Amino acid sequence: MKKIILIATAIMFASCSSNLEDLNKNTKDPDSVSGESLFTGAQKALVDQIATLEVNENNCKLWSQFLQETTYTDESNYDQVTRTVPENLWSAMYKDVLKDFDEAAKVISETTYVSPEDENTTNKLMITEIMTVYAFAHLVETFGDVPYTEALNIDILTPKYDDAMTVYKDLISRLGTALNGLDTSKGSFITGDNIYDGDVASWKKFGYSLMLRMGLLLADADNAYAKTTVEAAIAGGIITSSDENANMKYLSAAPNTHPVHKEVVLSGRNDFVGGKTLIDILNDLDDPRRPLWFNTVDGNYVGGEIGTPSAYASHSSMSAQVVEATAYGVIMSYSEVEFLLAEAAERGYTTGDTALNHYNNGVTASILEWHGTAADAATYLAQPEVDYLLAKAASTATTPWKEVIGTQRWISLFNRGVEAWVSIRIMDYPEMAEPTEAVSGFPNRYTYPIVEQTINGANYQAASTAIGGDEAETQLFYDKF
Image (cartoon, rainbow, N blue to C red; front, side, top):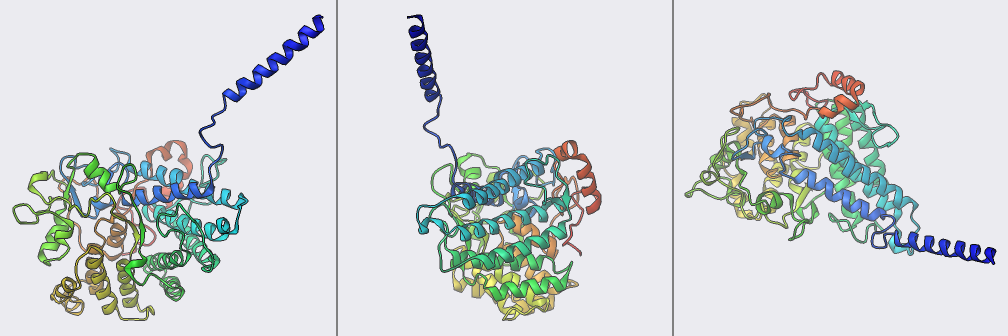
């Protein structure tokens, strides 16, 4: 009898234990995340980081002097320390972008799909690789030497920093391999690609346009390599109209609105106005994009003095179009491509057209992309200060085409601070104003995160020495003049 009772008691406890384990299971959340979902999240995190105006993460629109702060002016004065901006960017790119792209590729590779339409594994992997190249390129262009070969290995807590030029050329090689691997006869992401909706042909054009941009970035550092890369990209097939722009599609409701809408409209704050550097140039050129980008103050466009608190009511604020919830997050545009081609043509590379025509195409495309008109563009281009040949002849710069193309490319990159900041460092035009309380010279790079000095000190020190010092003014591997 005692045996029976003991057996019954054991069975009861086993049953209860099983039931308790079942109760502890979370039945609402998935046990795993699909590679496609990881890709979607990483893609959005990347474009958010590039497009944001959040001063804790991205100061490029201020450093490009498109905008000026109304109250707190640390960032306009090149302060990278108070808000630990480099650390926030570093963390976002490695943790939220690159690691998730890396994991997405692993999961997609290991997934068994139900139907061929859902699969298209190779194209998904190649698109993920293109986005990975873009993200790493941003880090290298921003910091210089960075962790690369050991960066995404979770078993290595103190990764070494790799030589920036070596990394950059390897990224271009990886990009070429990915583009060769794309099969335009097949699909890719059915959902979750918020840039091209899985269209492989469009990804191929974006990839070759990225190769064009990356190759040209090295023109002053390794001209022969740059020429070969640029001409290969053009032969591969680049973006040839604004309909092919690489635009992130944002939604009308939080939390998926454009970052600028969140930071300007949803925040309820009036922290930014147009920068004097940009607005003075727009005024001087009677630029048709002024009313598309800014509001007037008593009928005038007024920019805030760089580095100085600039009252919101007394200066031109951003237009409704700029701060719209569903505004595109742009990472590559036709206007940008045409300005790159104009530069390439001036450097003697084979582009299929003249620098003059590429320049005119770039200016026109920029105006049209902001919903100006072809007539606006024609009138603007007819001005002596904008007309390519007349402006070059009037320039007193050592390299006149750099001043003319550089100025118009910078204008066209309004609201794309990251690309504008790169353009300023390559072309050296237009000249930026010295902020009224600058804590450094013009920033040629983000300084390394302070936390790296603590947790990865030896590798940090080696990298700092290799690039010529961990200073804001240190020129990076591609910025030779």
